Length: 532
Image 1 (cartoon, rainbow, N blue to C red):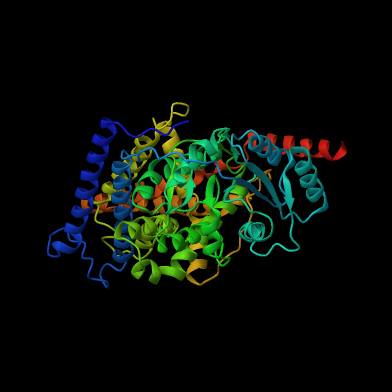
Image 2: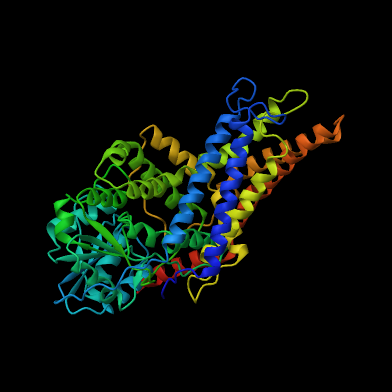
């Protein structure tokens, strides 16, 4: 399934979006910094009078910069690379599938697909780090059944990264190796569509998209849209500028270069991204094939999603925390630095969202008798415009990328809601990374466990706080003595009511019947296999 470039009508919309973003941001600045003596001033440099102006400016600047970067990716997406030269020979390829206590039926689906991959000399390696006896027995049976080489080790140091390092040191001798998560099933033509890129001697890896095929619940659908935003709208541009992230699955790697780099490091849970940066520093790069050649599963429930997102956020921000000097002054081009920053710093979005929610609440608590300390009333509607434009951008960037999956406006809104409702996941990951509390690799549960309201309690509590603050602002409107106070507090009330509704929509992401059905079916299938 090919990921199509955008058409002229899309670029016209993106241009309009860019002009609007520039206008809104500079209009915002003109009423904060450039005209501090205006009648409607919101003096950003008067900390004592407007103490909450600084975090808002930081959040607005971050959002503005990311919007401009996203536009750059969309406009440069149309420049697809030329077809590579054909390989004169077909070198041997190892297909690596790391597993750790994974469901039998999920791994078997991947092994079946790997056996159908078209290539004259390939070998499948099942890298089993399982610790419970049943999983060890299941993986041994699957390896025998599907002709895979089973590789085990005495410990699980480094988790998935250590598992692959061990296999490269002790088992794999092929010139190239392919990495697949246990739930990622490749198409038969995967190697035929990727291996020819290695005719360029500086190509370290060839990356293909992740693509979820299960989108039957609001959570799974929103998670799929979020993944597609990265793989379908940004990766072509990143690859063009030599800054394609090494994403750890659905890719082929040159073994000699991997060994020269010393393999993965273990301080971050996104060791794949870190390895790609070290390769870029050597002058090596990745190639992106914008074609869905592997299909997998999205996180089955909120708990699995929370684990996955925390791992990605903490791992990427750990890289930023540890390597920011090298990224800033290392042997990287300016465009590489820009791409890398937005790849790994996007996970600060949780802190940014908290600012948008917490600042108006604090402004109400700390208000003077006549005004709050957030934004002047005539500027607050601009924030609504930003939200609407952001949802429209998600829709326009994705809705016709593939023939088999048409994204709707509701899908775009669902993805926006999921980002907002992930604020505690991302904020915790960011704070821990700032204080050098890095996590190791944690697997994403493939079976799932039925989530409930307890899993989103902080979202619901914050929703209630926003609602109470909204009612309090509305009370100020009702008791206002003049029109100025009404214009001051009504927009704040509406803004907090909006976030109250969005945070309450986290209920959509838990307690869905489809997830519970999948869990039951998975347990039944595993029980049947063990009984047999």
